Length: 195
Image 1 (cartoon, rainbow, N blue to C red):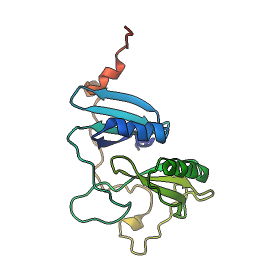
Image 2: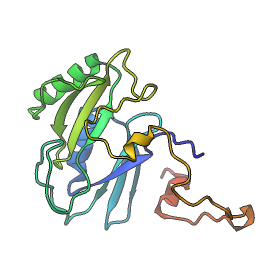
Image 3: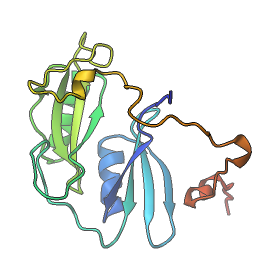
Image 4: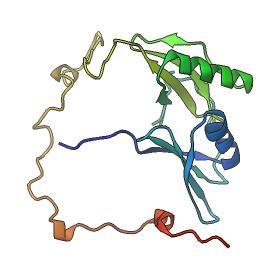
């Protein structure tokens, strides 16, 4: 079975990378760990944790999305609701809430969801963000809970992956045929020279 380690990165879009850097790096305190660009676009990565990043493409013609409250249903084509970032404790939630309020950025009150406490805000691109702190002694990863009053039959199969719903791999790619092709990020491997 594949061992997942987290979200390497979520890739978002911005029209203004400088405002995005000011918010994610300078206000929220996330390190800017990589940057790519060629004059037509930029692609920058911010470190959320040891395993997780959020990235932004800067596209000059992209338009800011309309503000939409977290979790409110919509109609029509749609794929993304909000980014939820975990912090260590309620104390961290209050620190973020105070920073956002001091910067005159709207932020919700602290809300209890049973297993997490959360606050909600928007970045300069109107991307909805939730900041969540785990509630001590409540671990839904270790002890999953399903409280849907009308679960589907597939849901009732349980938390663990169910075998037999997809074909098994019968011919894995042989080592001799495995290739990794170069992409734009190869530039990050080049040695920097100082003039």
